[in-house]
Length: 100
Image 1 (cartoon, rainbow, N blue to C red):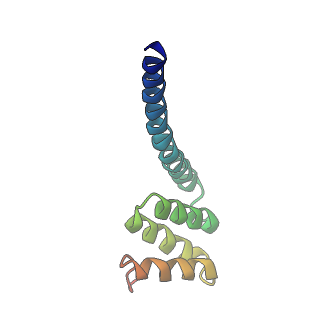
Image 2: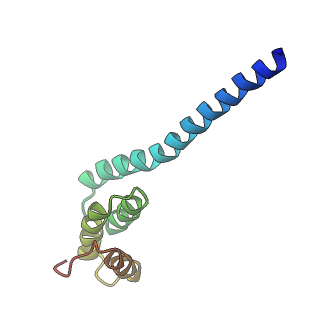
């Protein structure tokens, strides 16, 4: 009888740990977004950083903000093929506008 109780406690702990891990997986993206946003306030001409921010926004599911970040990146890096590709992907999801 005791091993079964121990198993249940262990099982419940594992479920709890899994939930914590899932929320921790999302946390680093939001933390990186915040850090990059702070960096960009002091370095507003860093097109590569804006491009990275756009990618992080996409990963976080914040697609409208991704469009804004890519628009800022495109102004600094107008011939960047990765930015064009990102706009095509966002457009296919219905989130890019033609007036960028």
